Length: 92
Image (tube, rainbow, N blue to C red; front, top):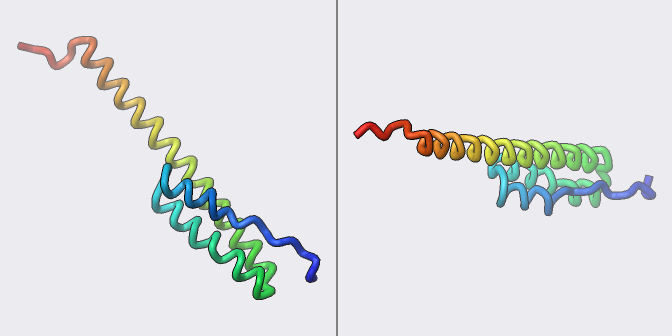
């Protein structure tokens, strides 16, 4: 059992998601990512793999929700700009 490779911890990805996309999901990803190394070094290979999968899941959720929020924001801004160009609300 000692020949098992350490699972990826997704710490860097989770930190980037926290900074640029979605703070709550990124923090959860960081928590799980920080557990991977300690669990692996203590011999809990299954726990390290599970923490790695959870970190990956929360990192992806944060990334996708951040992208969705940015897209929705852009749509709203363009819609407001389009309404302004069309002259709505310019009743003098």
